[in-house]
Image 1: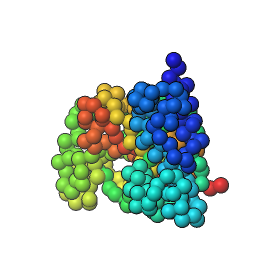
Image 2: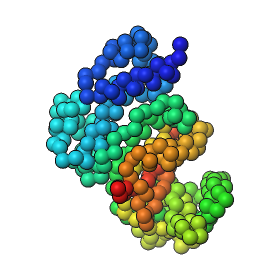
Image 3: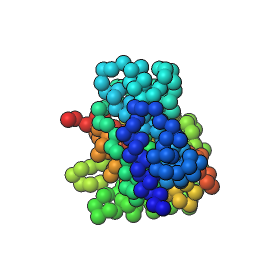
Length: 298
């Protein structure tokens, strides 16, 4: 029995009937499986329960329609949400902003049809519903350690992992977290000062501080500009597999999300990785990737 093709058939069916009532029984019948078996198979391939997938796909289409001037309640009703409050609660859970606020950033690019085999290439279980949260962050300051590197011949791909290895092996994080005015112990990996002429960039490992008073003068500091970010959380992984999931998530962002998102990198801003206590779990370890965005000009 070819479960991959059966689940793909189910995904296609969902896509074609999003504005109609859908039930677990109906979806199981569509591919000839018992509801319980279908539920388990679908979860194994897609990474989330089937009706949660349906809800998220409806939200993805509703998010695109927020670029129009239609009433939010009308959009919600079209996609099976009975009340404005219920729609808002579900929307905030996935996108991080209420629909009224998200409308400021919405574009009319409808989601691409999901191709399960393509997403499995990224080894991201659940990656097919990897909608980023949209967050606004004001300017903030980090203090830490800086590395000058270049993208020439992929040198940054060698230098940055070695930089992290040195940072971790010498336990430099303890020194950072002992500084005054530290906002949180979470660590940032930030790309700044990308020069398109020379291909040079500065990579910082640091922690956020509220101000620089009393901070070790030997540390490198940087101000991260205010921006609107698309925030991607990596799929849960064993801690030993987190680095691989981070790399795969970056590949997904560049190869799958950006082309169909309607957004592009915001100039003059910084993309960064955020490592907090969640990445220290032995299982279900995750971290966040922040991408500064602006709407793509058509």
